[in-house]
Length: 210
Image 1 (cartoon, rainbow, N blue to C red):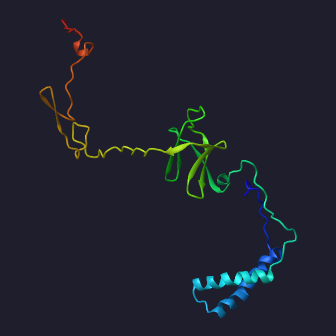
Image 2: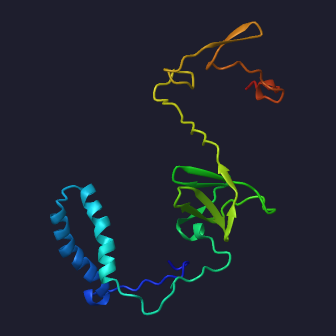
Image 3: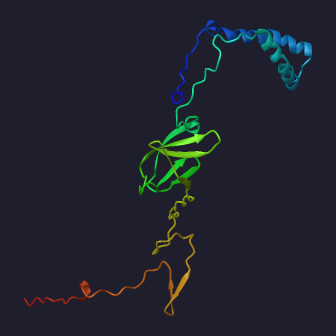
């Protein structure tokens, strides 16, 4: 409303909205009689009576405006109705340059020499036709649907573990053939000590001759 330059003035009494209150009073009185006289008993029949009643009512009770002409104001130059008549939400762009909005994931395309919009505060517009647009500092950004998010890998249940292995007992262990030898997965591989291993160092034996 503020962007359209419209100010709402509330009326807290029937006297403040006399013309519309008189119209409601007519509909609740005269229109009920019109429907009864026409024998309308369904919604379709009532709408047909209303379409015939309103022109006759307007012709009889309409009052010309004190000032002729239209009271609508011209919109400002460059005004875009789609940017005003929509729902607006603030969102923060993710590290992957993706904006999340409900079930939507929008990938922001790089433009205007900017390499990334990560962590930027943007405005998501949900328009009346159902389309989604992303704005940054009043500028509409080019977007495309982001790829489907990869599922999160969860660790397996390791409550039951085979002694001497690091695998749960419900995970099948398959043999692997390497260099003509069969090695069981999960079993420790023999390792050769390095040249600086303590086992390779010379040692002295002390003999007590006392």
